[in-house]
Length: 385
Image (cartoon, rainbow, N blue to C red; front, side, top):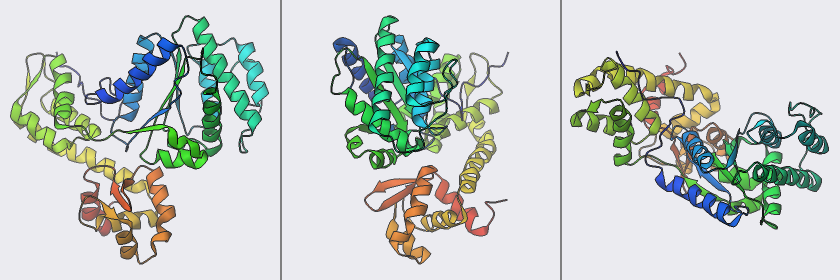
């Protein structure tokens, strides 16, 4: 019987090789919180481009937190107001709040979150005032207290796509967390987030003191981690890689986790979904090339389609420059505009995850191979069709 592919392109991975340092940071954070029974005051935010496995990393951290006895709440920002999403997840999550108790707090905050007994009209269309921050703080304190009453070690809040949070929500959350730090004892609560590379700029624009959050980069995998990401899933099913085949795929994947999964899945299918005892060979790698090419081109075309016409011109100007990173001045010169005129398109492309800051005055593409795609297709007008 053939075995389904253990590789998961486009899905949340169940293993996160090469991320031990990131996992250890949060494990230490939770250990201190548990031992001292107090707030983990510093917020950890893991940042990086799309496709590097940030969501998978956050989900693995959530699994480990729950295994250690913590209650957890997971929110993806950008789907409605951040504060409303967070409180709704608290109310509907594993803490099993009594609807009437949560409903009373939500009515105080003027929120509609779909919890039985708690539907009222949302009023978070203005900048958060001290009352809103204080009431959010009250909800977070109550969530932590209820977790302890439920014999949990503590409560961990996970927020993915933090850069997509609304400004008012980010500001309210940052201020509420700052207030909680004034009386941290008896409050085993932690906040762990993930977002795109410019998340720090977005969050500190909402609340300048959020620059004190711990922003940790999540980048490309090392060669050793890439080998593990390819070999371990196959080994678990009793299938091995020939060394030359594995080395070729490691080179092709360029340490980009999404590419690792695409290549691994294509090779697995080219090998006929092997049974235990099977081997993945260089011949299978070669047979998989067309499928990999189609998958990656679909990714590139999708990213190109996300850009507006003016943003596409920006991207084409970037692609016309040699080297991995591009100076903003060179982009402006290619477009015939002053550097200051790039601001809006630059921020929008960062919000869409297409480019990222690579240093002072430098930008780079977030996915390997996108420059080559643009050079080959974009200027010919073929990327739209």
